[in-house]
Each structure stands twice: as C-alpha cells, then as structure tokens.
Length: 195
Image (cartoon, rainbow, N blue to C red; front, side):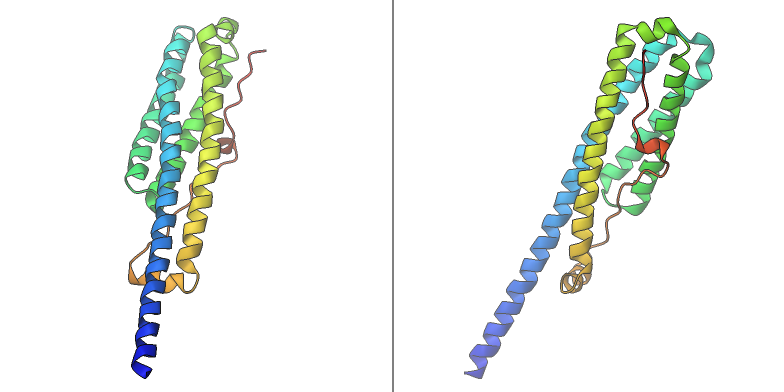
C-alpha cells in the first residue's frame, strides 16, 4: 500500500513539474511573439524613413547634416532591431534597441522641426502622407511595446514565483528584459503639424 502511495506522489510531482515547465515555455513563447509584433511595426517605420528623407531632401538641400543624422540613426536602429530579434528579452539587446530608438526619435524630431520652416515642404502631399503614416506606425509600435512588456512581466512573474522558480532554475529559464524607452521625448511619436 505504501508503495502505491509513493508511486502516486512521484507521478503527481512529475506531472506538476511538467505543467510548470509547459507554462514557462508558453509564457516565453508569448513574449517572443509579442516582440515579433514590435519587429513588424519597427521594420515598417524604418522602411518609411528613406522615403521621408528623399521627400525632404529636395527642399532642404543645405541641411545635409540633419538628413545624414536621420539616416545614421535609422541604420543604427535597424541593427539594434536585428540583434533584439535574434534574442528577444535579452537585456543587452533590449537596452541597445531602446537607445537606438531614442536617437532615431530625436533625429526625426529635429527633421520635422526643420521641415516646419519650409512652407512648400509642409504642403507637399508626399510629406503629409509619410508624416501621417509615421505617426500611425508610432502608435502601433507603442501598443506592440506595451503588449510585449506585459508578456515579459507575465513570464518573469511565472519564472520568479515559487514553485515556478524551482522549475525555471532547473531548466535555465533566464529573465526577459522589458523594452523601455529612456527619454520622455522618445516615448512620444514625433509631433507633426502642417498648419
């Protein structure tokens, strides 16, 4: 009789560990999927920027430094996104991406501020359409980032709470890093006004 009780406890413990392991895997896959949505939106944003620069270039030829800063910041952000996509949740990759996004947001802000001084550029149909698309994409990035951060928090909670912490330690589930934009200016979409 004691053997059967012991066997039942062992079977219960095995199924319990399997259940916790599967929940951790599900939570990890959830935050990776959420990051994939950020990837889609940021890629769209990065694809719009060269068109924006080309549109602006014809109007503000003597502002080459600003245009080059935007392209450089975009290229840095693309590299940061590739590194983060390779390992979503990695602290170094998320920090690098957040920094690159802050720089890109600042350089786009300077570009739009500069564009305000050119009435013909403000009235340009391509410029208005690209600005609207960028703003819309910025909103989508913000929603995707929030979903990612929620998924990371859920995963980290499961990984850190007992008894999940025991299983996470046994199977090397590492903590995931939130994607946080460090400066208040970068948390907002660039302000665009053609009035």
